[in-house]
Length: 148
Image 1 (cartoon, rainbow, N blue to C red):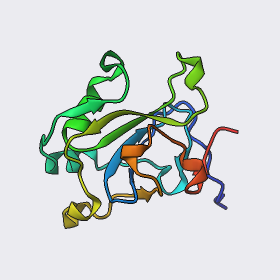
Image 2: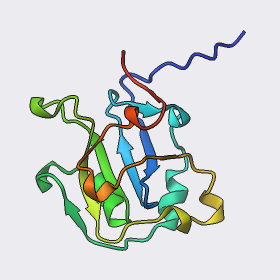
Image 3: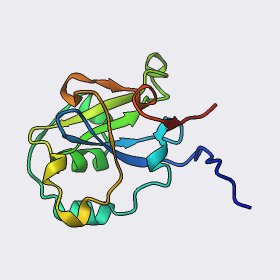
């Protein structure tokens, strides 16, 4: 008999997508420690399809020192995604605040603009405005799995 109990993927960097209340898309990287919406716990395997559809569309603004922003985050933002990463364990003042916004795209991708072949992508809806949210804790917004 299979268990309905889902375990948190500790140590695995789960990359997941969310839309804010204005329909703008963001990527979130859990660093193997951040809360992950239950609907996305298996991860998202269609990144290649998404990035094939997304063109480089804009510059990006960095929310943190640009030297701290890894290349993948820069690429995501250049393609129109807000980019959040679980709080940096090397900056102890940040631990526990949630996902930190690293980049903000100048021209965000909107949920309603996704082509039909990408509507199957699991995207969590968060009642926040990514422009006004330097930190996001999804556990208070949607059902999540977290480290206990």
